[in-house]
Image 1 (cartoon, helix red, strand yellow):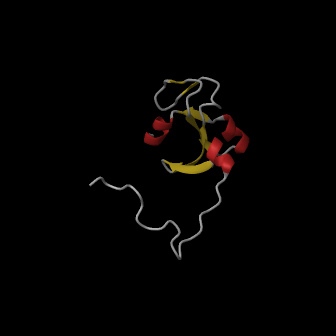
Image 2 (spheres, one colour):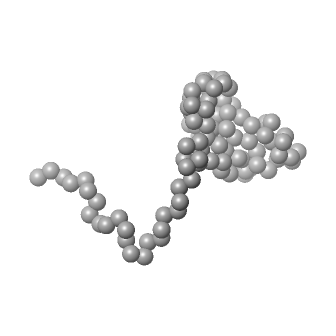
Length: 101
């Protein structure tokens, strides 16, 4: 007899918390989030393939992040010289390189 892939329990369980509303902008363009790496906080934002129009050098592997490649933009969230200086120092990373750094 073939296996059934249908869920056996009902989707709306009594007592379950209601789902949070979906932020369409974050789903489409990637939201800004804060991640901690090596004891420092970084602002991290995903860049989709359609938004990536320039070529950058990934600081993780020193290879090119080519146009139309989805990638990550990261900059310090706790810099000493202010937010404008931190934004100027942002770097474009391959997603994989950022995860393993």
